[in-house]
Image (cartoon, rainbow, N blue to C red; front, side, top):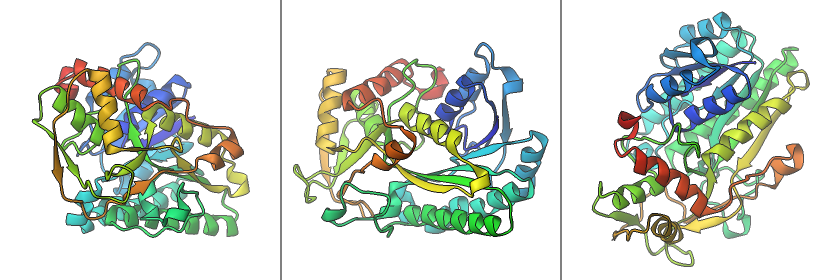
Length: 348
């Protein structure tokens, strides 16, 4: 298949490109490089059997409908994996309109371009933030849980889910084939275990990389925002899924989409187990052999105390489940990358 990967120069997007190339697909990437990196795409392109013909990069914005439609037509795209987004919860609280512009508004242009170019399969990178702060009796979270975000990031993604459902309904009524999957991620962690590509964010907000930066001496300490949450040790509890499992789920779902049936689905992607910040900290100390200094800070607005999922639906319907369930294994793959690339992709 010819697959357009939006945001394909980002952390998850580059891992998705690697997975799709390994399956024999031809990949076209669009990314504005605001927070992505061209270097991992060059690395992937240089691998045996890939080259510029099988991995094409176009710098640009997914909200540029004319450009996106041209890419879809010129490369005869069969399916789109849509990762491009701003994705920092706390940043969205400070600059909500930027999130609605980059995430929600850009998705309108993408869906219009897909319809115009007759692209009939879409896998959308959604988020557990669409669930907001579910009551205790709704945890572990199922796909039927009420979606009531508590931050603009979550709302910006939920609005896209609504648009996909409405667009799919319109296409179905007009006899236009279309299938989509909305994959609600929990916390993505780890790096390519082969060490080819990794994780490089500016600014860095992900908890495991921040801990590893402390271990490397690049930060003095980790600030734990909130130690009085209603959780066993007072710190936030999250469901961590390895990035390789995450992109494997995308590839598995894509294979099952049937545009002729007007197929639209939603799936949670996680392991079904929650780990507190202190539990993750203990894992990082075990893996690195280093003590991680911490500073207690206030709770951040928009942070639910506990989020972990019931991933049973995707297993029941397509037989997929996460293969990497150990938090130590996730941390170990990230530590390998950060230790070998202390300056991120500048060292690649």
